[in-house]
Image (cartoon, rainbow, N blue to C red; front, side, top):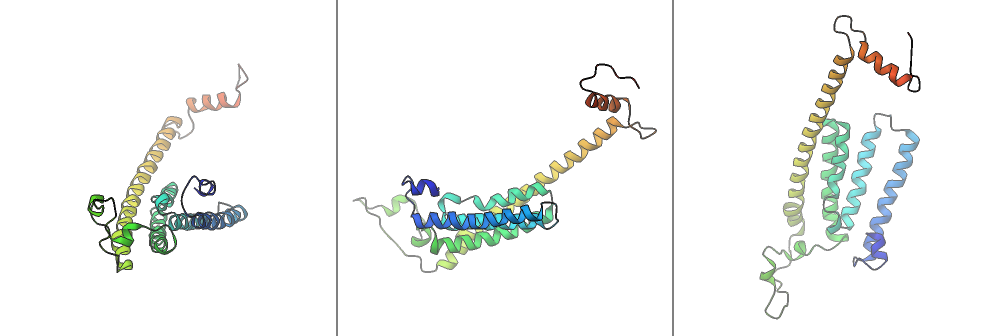
Length: 217
């Protein structure tokens, strides 16, 4: 979006897209260095990764309201990979804060949302005059309430439902993986002795001696 804007293909104010580009990369690059330096095996690193992911997409949504409507749900999708309800709840709470900050900040610093400013609540034909002029009915006199009630609250509900669906999908995937491992163990182990059976041995031999036609034991 920033590159297309610089080339004059997009019509968004270049200051807005440049700020979104620079701040989001200003969050991304240091975070990548921290992950590379500390490693991905530490218990706290996943919380840090999800935190900077929410921050980065909140910045993008703040400045590019129309182009990043669903961007704030991406961190919740990332959180599903950990198959943890605790991490999903943590990510949802961060996302909720990101939605609140991005929408309030976007109203004042990002792309102007005409519906918030003009309180348009009817179809377009209600605001177009006979001579193709826009008929303005009312200017929003209570921005904080309108933004919170009609823009933030619905997105929080949608994000909450999306989180619950992701949690259910993650549980189903985890259960299927456990069942697959159990079935694999049952296929490989002898029921009486608990040691590997002939089928497991043949697969191991086939993998260890791929270039050998005959093996004697």
